[in-house]
Amino acid sequence: MDDQDRESAEGTADRPVPLGEEVFALDTRMSGFTGITSGYLIRSDRPCLVETGTATSAPVVTRALHDLGVGANDLATIVVTHIHLDHAGGVGDLATAFPRAEVVVHERGARHLVDPDRLITSARRVFGRVLDDVFGLLKPTAAHRVRALGASGTVDLGGGRTLAAFHAPGHASHHIGLVDSATGDLYVGDAAGIYVPETADVRPATPPPDFDLDLALGSLRRFRDVAPSRLLFSHFGPVPDVGPTLDRSEEELRLWVDLVRDARASALDLEHAVAMVRDRTRARYAAFLAGGQVEDKFEHLSGTAANIVGINRWLDRVEGTSIELGDAAPAG
Image 1: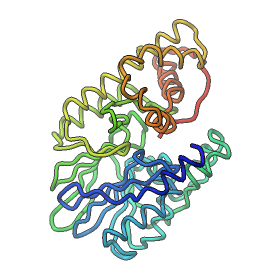
Image 2: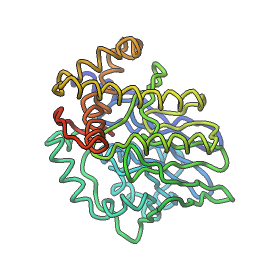
Image 3: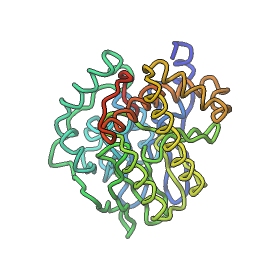
């Protein structure tokens, strides 16, 4: 993003958006973009933040919580759907800003919030110096403040209200879904892909190294089974049209896997695989591609190359072959 675009984004007067039943959407303004990464506050008897955004977003999220009347000692819980840095990068900063908040995460990700060195080293290897500007550095959180969930768990929101958490792998092995008992809202993280509110498109989120089609489809089935009233995407925003959106999520996953299979069969390198996928999905994403800056910001978040590489690595495992298309930064 150039300086003019960044200044325009930073000059936008973003405010938390009320979604009803004391739920508020917070734009974390990842990398200065608006409309790319959501956090959510449930302002219940025990206030809960779902998703922190990046470390560089922590001041934005802190101000939003204060604007909603949640002071330093008021936040009871911080929950992250998974530990990718656009979702959990701000945990350490926000745990410091809200010292009474318990941090809830899947057990596969808990140790990385306590000791993030390995996660940061891996991210640095992929992103290089861009890491500092786009994500910032995840700061450690004291172990006694982190609660690790297994296959399921519950977050107490007070007054009899709860978040029911359950394992939802496929996008990442440490991914969970969350259902609000009062609203029926389902916090989907990245397990249902990326929702583009400007065009109502759904795009896949299949980054390396954890993408697994079978697990991803299983998570979508679980999402249908809980019969949510609304999907709350981390990228980006609330979607009330539940059934068709989950159907589209599955359709996109299957389509992109088929496209990557074709790329492998044709022995394409990554550059040509990206060009092939773009060409074959051009009509499908016509409104998205016509958006200019919309395409730019979502490609920045969930790049075509990263999605292809993630699918290719899964196909290597399931087909017992190793076909190198190239390497790419993981998506969110």
